[in-house]
Image (cartoon, rainbow, N blue to C red; front, top):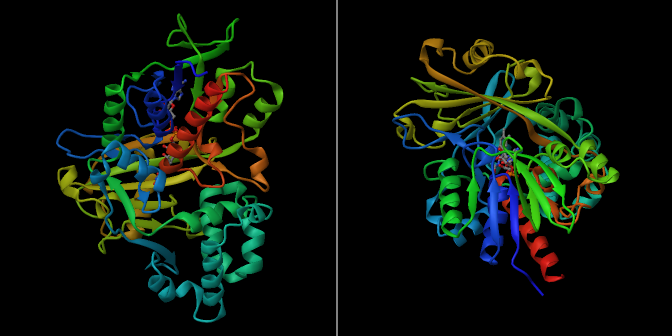
Length: 439
Ligand SMILES: Cc1cc2nc3c(=O)[nH]c(=O)nc-3n(C[C@H](O)[C@H](O)[C@H](O)COP(=O)(O)OP(=O)(O)OC[C@H]3O[C@@H](n4cnc5c(N)ncnc54)[C@H](O)[C@@H]3O)c2cc1C
């Protein structure tokens, strides 16, 4: 027989909020504890006075294939606020930028020559788009698989720069299912939410509050402990406050779950601590003029080209600059290990490092164009899936009865993204409801 549960969710990112939605709809009492004083987690944004839209701290867009996210927007009655402009992505080759986000653009791209390599690139891409066999692919690394099937030149030109840029020291160890998932599920049409992702997070939180969900902001959880009698206690804030719940869902990083629940049995804990991830450092600039004279949105930059960042993203070539008081918003970002020096530099120091890179894209760029900069960093940005990774994914149901875990590290074979945060949050809610129905 099902009973009405009191459930705590740790984290008000899209995973936690999606879980809260289904649990509250099923009639349960939900409290969300969020460490920050805003909702949205990694997809949250900030807004200056005079801006109509927020800017994401880390560049964000949806793909037209993000069915879990678009389905949720439908359910929430917010789909009309999703917008899908057509921004342009470019690749660097021999000192020039070439569009690379359509079949025609790929055919014209000079980096692959005009012969067999281009055909192999196309056939391998088509195979990955159509195949569903990611389990077979996870047994190989991208490095080995692509060299074999796409050939040395295609790998060196197209895939190695992506792998090195995203995964640094792990580039040669990441499994082929990761690349399959990106090519299989992504589209060139990119989407956002009217007002920015923070506006969506705020609209979602308002709907949840309207359903009775209690969202406690600025209240980090410190510990989750099993109480005699079976309930779970969550201590928050200064640790003086403790509340008991039938079930607890944690949506933070695996490392933080391990710290929150030191009593997790050895194997599960070992699995959490064995997961690898990359961090991200993103400097956002508000500028007087555009960096991209051609109106490009996303500059993909191979590490070997020697730029001080991996990607330059001109947000206002995706959404209109009028949303930001007429300023041009540009991100310079990189995926890095958490001990990289960029995690210790100040905004100003990073800006000084980045200016020469921006000038290589637009020689007219001058530091006097910069109105303001913001620096955002996270040590948990991109899970790293090694060979046969499916065997390493921690179960949503942890070995502690009543304690569940849903994070970016578990959406594999898919790559992390708000779409899959929604999917795993809802999957966790389903498992909690099934367990409640089962006694
Ligand atoms: C650089 C970068 C670029 C990205 N680009 C895209 C993109 O283009 N499109 C896309 O869809 N996705 C993108 N993502 C991924 C997307 O942001 C994540 O997949 C998604 O936001 C994860 O949601 P989540 O709820 O699982 O986790 P989070 O958003 O990490 O939510 C976890 C929450 O837990 C809170 N928390 C932490 N500790 C505690 C504690 N002790 N107690 C209570 N709360 C706590 C955190 O503050 C946070 O709000 C990007 C991510 C990064 C880093």
